[in-house]
Length: 441
Ligand code: NAD
Image 1 (cartoon, rainbow, N blue to C red):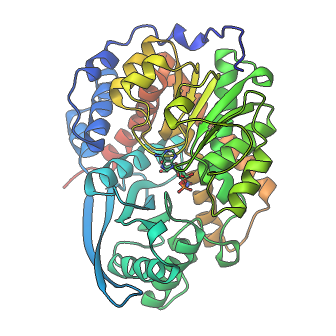
Image 2 (image 1 turned 180 degrees about the vertical axis):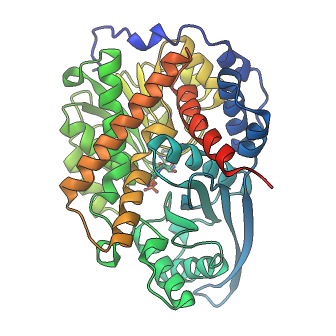
Image 3 (image 1 turned 90 degrees about the vertical axis):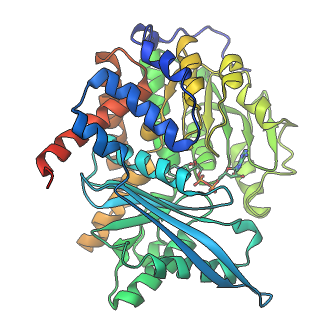
């Protein structure tokens, strides 16, 4: 059961009145990039940056769409759509993952690219923001088809990607295997070994220790920092985690290791609730032995994904897909703290409700920044040709995430707003300076 002692978040001290959050709830959002624009408008209304900068940061720098004809195993040809959006290079070469999913489209990739810009600025790493994706269902493709598709995409993007230009990484539906195919294809096309062109690679190809668990680790650090700020006791705290892939499973393991009891987990095949706490090691082993999915895991009673989001827990970690915290969920949610492991899990309309209810939300552009932070460390190690131990990587990661959390908290407090707007303000302050220094022609 959740910690019954009522936790009164200290956060409400500065989240008590922010009319800009109510304003956004009345806007009509068409898609994910619109959601980015309305959150930017919220931050603009607080920060009041120059109009010129506002125009620049609202407009993705480059959008690339490619058609990829792939020979399928059965001898037919199928054409897939691939995307890469570079939102900004004001702070450095663009950085962002590649997603394989059926709902990938240019609108989604634009939104994810913009979030990368803000995420890198908040994490204080010298990167701009980008994102890529291929509209496909990776679970329905054979390994051979996936390899041909990944290599075709890399070839089509060979002038876009580059160690000091644009650096992809894994995202939903991709991992170190796809990154290895990308680095190999890119290196062959350019005639030189280029390990730094992607991050999230296998260790033997120049990957970094600690990268695989880094996003989940960042979720854990953000959660502990937020708990300290709002006065939530981690020893008696409980949580629910949606998604049991890279981010969700590592977050579950690491939160559990800090004494936070995980009562509910889910993926796209199953949801499990156990009031005594789920045996996370058993769940990890079960998923490993069952094709990465939780269906059939016997460690608790079956629940729906909606029941997971409304579970009687202290902390909710959405770590699967976007747009799951709707107005309905926000109104009924029992958790007092939300740590956004996924990108875009909360609808703008739900933000205002969570805010009014005093629920603290650590936003995606801060909470899931651990992945890109260690991606940056991987890139530095590739350039340097010298590799750090896992303890070194984790120590640098934790220090970086804690500093990022502090600056977002500070800005939210100073501008009397919630952590999401505080995070945008943190990013925009830095980006405005960079855009001004660079100038225009
Ligand atoms: P993944 O593919 O490894 O795992 C996704 C998980 O979500 C799987 O367990 C899947 O079953 C589950 N899922 C899918 N649809 C679902 C649904 N409708 N309901 C419940 N569960 C569902 O992906 P990931 O890398 O863990 O990414 C998850 C989220 O975190 C994405 O939003 C991604 O953009 C974000 N993210 C990932 C990283 C990273 O380093 N991997 C970094 C930052 C942000």
